[in-house]
Length: 285
Ligand SMILES: [Zn+2]
Ligand SMILES: [Zn+2]
Image (cartoon, rainbow, N blue to C red; front, side):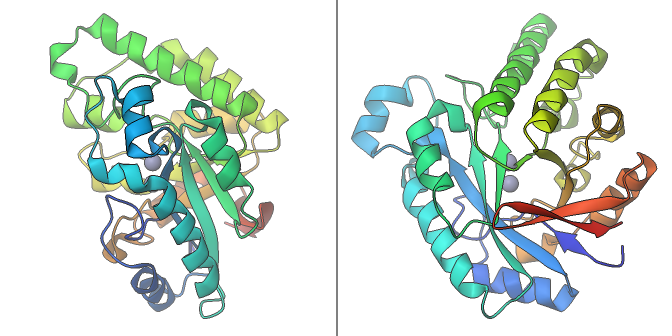
């Protein structure tokens, strides 16, 4: 792709990433990216102060205590990244807002930050459950896994109806673990109607989806979402499509973006989107 861009990445303001924001920007500069977004994690359900959090939400969740700091990390990331824009003109200030409906107060506080160029709306865990990363699929029967997936799409549909964000992050995220790590193949066609409804709602509200290339670097080996879903999005009239590596270290920035762009073209997209102050702009593919 001529105008290389990467709209999804994490710096050390994310509890699961290690390289500092400036180092990430240096790598993006070295690669010659024309648009590059840092989008650190803000999982809204981990927002409360520790004592309150334990009372309200902890239940059976096995969450790293570092996540308690999510509010501070998210705000610090936005402030730092927006300050770095002066030095790196291609830089966009984003956030990956997880589970906004599980804590609307937290989501509203972040969405009100005017520095933001882009908000990726993500769903990493169903309400009351752990992140899909942590679930033990080996101990579930296939019916439970299908029920989990159905809840996943239902909750995303709700998010696409009510939450404030710009693009839907890594649709089909649980397949990274269910299929990629555990080798369990699912008949995803039984969810196509739910997925179409998600796309209709997104499109109706002027929002888009991303092609997240992280799956290519993992055992799953596929894009998130992959061809059948991107085609479905296009058929539904989808036009806003971003490309993101979901890099959690500088070395992974822009990895897989060419494959993502290729898939987008094959599915009929002529443009990829990026965002400035939450307005979509387009670049030819
Ligand atoms: Zn994510
Ligand atoms: Zn991410």
